[in-house]
Length: 280
Ligand code: CNA
Image (tube, rainbow, N blue to C red):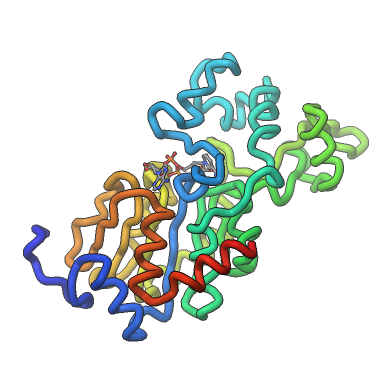
């Protein structure tokens, strides 16, 4: 659509239009999709930003190609690069951003139907979004198991291994397989939770997409399942995933913390949001 095509649901295809739609009570089932960009201001690098992204900074791990660090066959042969990275990314060091608190605020207001995140950093949980609202599409550091017999591995031992930069092994007799956090690697299936909750996208009355390059499938296809005339808002440094092609798509290009502050302000929630974030 060109910019002159009138929207069907929104009064205008901009921040004010989205805020009015929310304030008028038309957004009661919001689905949010997030990626690494909502955690960069917490100090966790994303993958694909050209200088600061993880892939641009993996040379020291001597990988054959950057994605190998999250490749299950590579991990079987050499788990050390992943564990070096896990040591840096492991939850506990980072604090949720105001973008995470915005998700908590939507939940508190009873407006958040589901949050689909690609992030593995657990910051959505730490910001107070309940576990049953979150679909961790690429898993997370919350659990870990043996890659061979799938037996869960105790969390305290995992924390110890990460802290001591050791590679943990399965404790089952006759197994001794490698243990890995239940993060979805390239070559592994997504959790059933992802597929079981996809139907919710067709029930959404507003979709917000934040901090993702929408380049990893099948996650990247989620916005297509949102109803044709349902507003989709992209809060991201760059335009991605064809968002902008529908009549009610809104692009809020820029930093996502800034974007959620502006949206909260336009909804009359800014003070509440800042207060929530400070106490997280
Ligand atoms: P990505 O491919 O690295 O894309 C990040 C996107 O966010 C890009 O479009 C950036 O332009 C944008 N971005 C970066 N910083 C900001 C900012 N401050 N404000 C707004 N936009 C910003 O990451 P995706 O999540 O799309 O890729 C999916 C991978 C990345 C998943 O499998 C994750 O597991 C994986 N990942 C997760 C984390 C984490 O958990 N924090 C960190 C790094 C990578």
